[in-house]
Amino acid sequence: MDIKNILLFLISSILLIACKAEIVELDIKAKDVFAAVDGEDGVIEFEAQFSNFGELDEEARAQVEALENILTKFMEIDGFEIENTDMGYDIILEGEMPISNKKLDATYYILVSSSELFDGYTFLELKTGDDFNNLSNQMSAINFMLSPDEFHPTKIKLKGKDVQVLIPATEIDGKAYLFYEGVINGRISMKFEGGVFDKTGAGLFLKEN
Image (tube, rainbow, N blue to C red; front, side):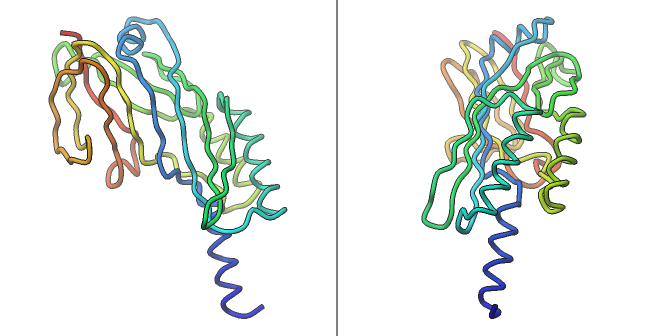
């Protein structure tokens, strides 16, 4: 095997198992947030896209199938699709995650609480529970480089009526904000990526007017 083929093999292997999503989209309704902070647990829908470089050969397909089995064990996955691209293939996950005012063991969940910073606001944040460590350990057992990133670039689509929001360090409609304040009547889409969001989940503050 010449040096070019070795490099291609290494690159494709690394990208196959680089478990960081291109984007994770969370679809959240404000009414579910306010219900959860009052003690009524619910679920939100999510979609995650992972892009991979290289051919989906038998070895890669076997790893993908093993990952699917692990993910469905620790998360509520409704859809697991593989789409071929010019450079390789994408894996698209669709499913649900809990929303609660209590800390959970769930791999990923939305934690809501009364804000200690802004009076009358509810604080919403993406969190990981103990099941994330279990998922990570089982993925690493397949391949030591398969350990997933805890947090990923995240887009939150929030739907509500007459809901006031305070959003730190976000991007909305391609425009970056250090701190965004506004009122939602319909839907707003906000993106959290890079920097501190490589180490902590996305979050925002909201309240009913």
